[in-house]
Amino acid sequence: MISKIFPHDARFTRVMSILSVLNQNSGKLSLSDLSEESGTQVDELLPQVNAAKMLGLIKVKESDVVITKLGKALHRKDEGSESEVGKKLAGFEPFMAAIALSKRRKNFTAEQVSDFMAAKDVYLHVDEHENANLITTILLQWAIEFNLLAYDGERKVWSRKAQ
Image 1 (cartoon, rainbow, N blue to C red):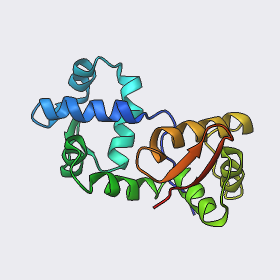
Image 2: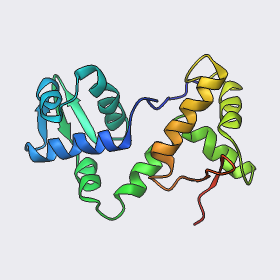
Image 3: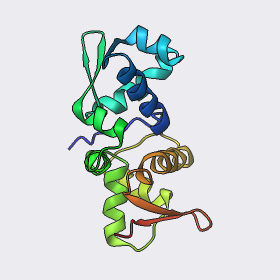
């Protein structure tokens, strides 16, 4: 089974900026125009576009980036949009592994998420330490924002989000 891996260099705030720029431009821009309007180099923009596309927030048609209904809803912070995006996030690594661990353990570390993924031959980086750092970064950027997990920064452990 091949796991879908969420882009480790995608940042929530940057994805939201893309949605904002698209929203201000009739919901559609070419990639080069999006780059210019957002003040972001294309190579820095691509992971954000990829993440937004994976989450169903945008569609890419030929060279145009088009905001979707869900992308508009998230931009407006419509009720239920964050929950819908959170459900989509849960289908990608490292979120899948972290959520699985949260069901088995009260607390767990990024290193344990890394080991869990490694057991399935899924890696964000070949270096174990860097892999755990990337997992931490992704989870801090996305899992907290979309209420998938909670983080105790003092103990550096993750846990299931209290409902």
